[in-house]
Length: 347
Ligand code: 13P
Ligand code: SF4
Image (spheres, rainbow, N blue to C red):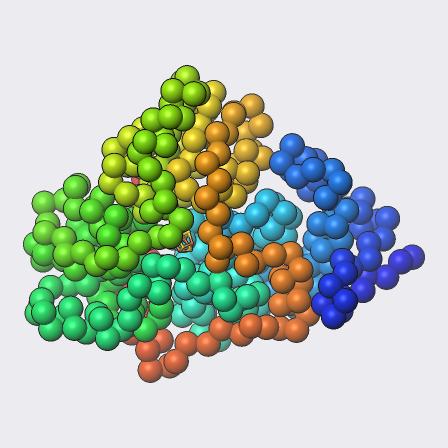
């Protein structure tokens, strides 16, 4: 029997794969075969087999955001979803080790909710333009400028920023969180476009910050109009991190999970998901009869997470995510207040 070479990182070669392991990954391939070319599969399969084995040995789980590539999303993850689902799952797991297939703020949130567990992120450079747009000091200055006004912070932020906030939100529950506050003014940080989208649906005054997602801000309404002309009957679903004119041009606006639910509900002939490109691949696996039209905007941070990186992370138990205890308690409270809100129907 061939041996799975666990320390392949020095040579950058894929682990060896036994014929039994290749067979064991066949059910996974059957699911993803219209998305992943056959020629690529043996390399993915060798990493998948090695990761699945090591996950069992380490009592680890892999949480994967909807923007992870299909070989991660469908190949090795235990739990998948939007930021809200990952935050909830991170709070509920019994595993000893959590590997975050996503970006750094998601790993930090998992650590906040599991201070006693080991949380790993395969690449420390997996950041986020929204998280980079604001610091804890910025929030303190805003509080001075707007005394008494509560601060709602998108989870796409550092623990330091969460610690300065009253409550967190995700794109799935931003309106619910804003509406849950008794004040008729709120500071909404840091995503300007998500904040504007919420402001359009509430009577409260929403004070905004100028943070943007570098992936979603690139979409343009004119581009969507061209797609509609080219693909008759196209249903357009957009993420609320997109600019307002893009949202106005879309048939539905929601978080990544809400967009997936909408595809399942409508089962359109053709759909365009105005969001990170890998999500269409992941959803197309479940809906092979739907034509997914793809303007391919990739998140460079999400794409730093790879199968070789996940394997190395589990082999070397790196990179361990820590949150300064001085900020962790307050940041955890802001996340927990969000998680304590009643679940919304239809999400
Ligand atoms: P959701 O999956 O929560 O909609 O967030 C999208 C996103 O950009 C995460 O980084
Ligand atoms: Fe951040 Fe945008 Fe990438 Fe999500 S898609 S991690 S919001 S840069």
